[in-house]
Amino acid sequence: MTMLTIPVDILRQQFGDAVQENVSLAPYTSARIGGSADVLAMVKSTNELMDVMKVVWEHEIPYYILGGGSNVLVSDKGVRGVVVLNKAKEVRFESGDPPAVWSEAGVVLSNLANRCASKGLTGLEWAATVPGTIGGAVYGNAGAFGGDMSGNLLWAEMLTKNGRERFSVGQMGYGYRTSILKRGEINAVVLSALLRLNNSTKEEVSAKIEQFSERRKTAQPPGASMGSMFKNPEGDHAGRLIEAAGLKGTRIGNAEISKVHGNFIINHGETRAMDVRELIDLTRRTVKQKLGVELELEVEFVGEW
Image 1: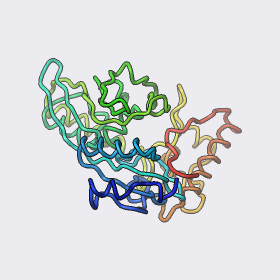
Image 2 (image 1 turned 180 degrees about the horizontal axis):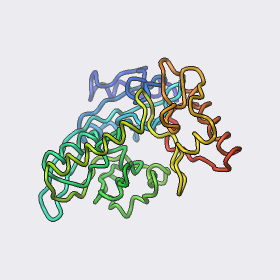
Image 3 (image 1 turned 60 degrees about the vertical axis):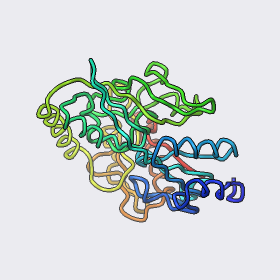
């Protein structure tokens, strides 16, 4: 896909300066790594997201939806087509038994968890330290501290080529850090989600979030990273296996397997995506050779490799 095939003029007529060409994606990812998008379109509402997707699908343009930019490694060569940066952030709390919160896909997950806490609503404490957006969490069944999106989701509204459709949690095909979306079984874009909560007190919920935050600070390294690189094998932890294989502190270029937690690769500045990928490949080979375990990626490779 070349630039000439992307109808930038049509997108600009609708979205003006929110549509830019040849934009570096590194500042929009948690790892601060990656090349440029042919076109970056920033949307601030569900309607804008739907309008962009209408153009993208009508013209059969490759696309990628970017939220918080965690759990992705963008290639040095960049991303062909249109990258849609979703900043749709409307939130509505719904009283009932149980209570719930409706959120557009661009809402930052940790911010939503803290908003729930301020209202004395429990259920999303696990999400208070998780990077990324609601859309990304629905897409990848994000989770931490024993909770995950499959335990909260009532339904997700998604845009398909047939229009807006609601998918119940049972229709999402959730597994450990995966879904029908992440496996590519459906061509759809997450618009919003309704999440189940429960009543509690502000003090109790805030205390639990503080507890999780302290655990996260002591266990996970500071610095720019993609988050957890590999899924935890059943009955074990990827970080333990990587440490047991003697890989903590291993470095290629400015990419380093963290000395604090083996399942994190840290960007020490101006890191190439290819260096990270080589470090990932080295990790998988070494753990397989030494310990006989095949590590499965949690991070998604994005762009032209």
